Length: 384
View 1 (cartoon, one colour):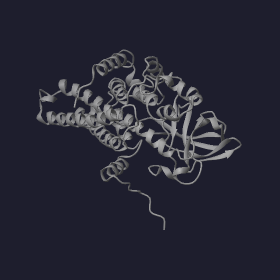
View 2 (cartoon, helix red, strand yellow):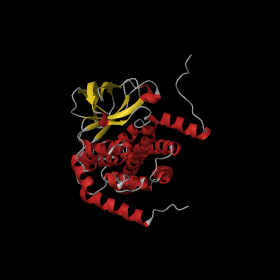
View 3 (cartoon, one colour):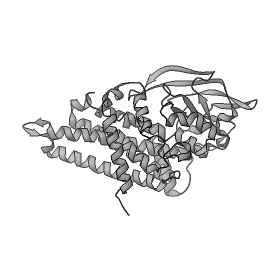
View 4 (cartoon, helix red, strand yellow):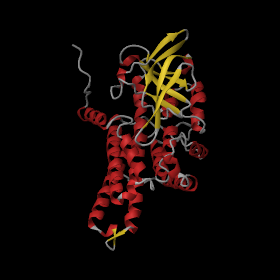
């Protein structure tokens, strides 16, 4: 069992680190304070060929592993936390699903712009009455000629302010087997938007309303029976979520470490106090433990879709540790950490949001328990 990166991985990490410091470090604070998507960073990252790291070369990717993408997310986050969203969008979620299940025409229309830094695909899953209980979604795809009419609404859609297209989960028929997904251009007739809302992280979102939105049969990603495939691909999304959450915690840790090395109170450096030393020892152990779980999940997945149980474990521990470490880093820095003069507050708020996004911590525990007992535990009440 080898806990060291390979020579190729070390070289890749160093190249990403150099790129991030040279091109993304300047403006990092401004990016996190802006509600706008960092398109400037998107073009830089795309030009560096860091979009589609895990995707096959024939799809415009690099043919790398999931572990490669995790390493890149870490290095980008440690320099410019906001730019981690760009890397995530180009390597996980809809991009991964399109690469796995999309037709050549769909990849050319929707995936290529994302990988080249000109497009952004949002994933429309959550609805007013379908959050953790995603299979209760009500957005419908009704046959219309050789295409479909989409009707329904989506909420809490990440990137809904800036996306160029939407990968929407829809219902072709009743039950879980009736769920599939379609691709919708952001300018499609019949797609309208609700008022702008803001997350605690500062990111903006808006409700999506589909009113007889007409789509071609060529824009159907997965028809009936596609739900399990979509969720399997979504496990890769959770690996990306885990990597960002943990990296947010480590970024805050690094800032706080520098602070306590030089900040003096009562004539001593803060790091000279045993209370501070123990706090950082605890944070370091948490980060190291979570990273091992994350690396195990990513490495075991290799180029295949990751294990649901290992992914749930990684997401839970990385979400929790990322937030706890960022929160403790803020506490050690006092008012400086609480202010917006550093990025610690942003890392704490973003890590907290990732405990909800992509599957709540509670739902991850359910998934882990199913792995432990090797059976499913349905949350829905049985029919009378």
